[in-house]
Length: 129
Image: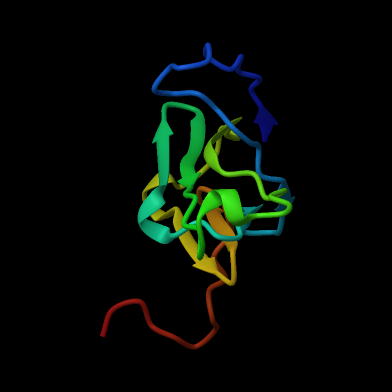
């Protein structure tokens, strides 16, 4: 899968991108997997869309402080909106894509489309009974 680069919209835009979650992509015999580190992001705040040959993951890590912002001595965790877009391989079963969010890690499973295969005929088994 290839990542498409996207320029961030201007400041003040409703679609301003604040951070970019790290993503790993790997392949097995039957599927591609994409994992994204999304600590502190709640499931309702994540949207996954497949449009044509693109997979888009977007969402928001909200700032829910346990105290007033002025009481912080240091605030390094990035908050706000994110978006990642990837070009999908040609042969996917897009109807069977699944996603799971566990312990701040989103895993998207992209099953490969069925390929041609040979079917073995067992000896001694009649075709019609």
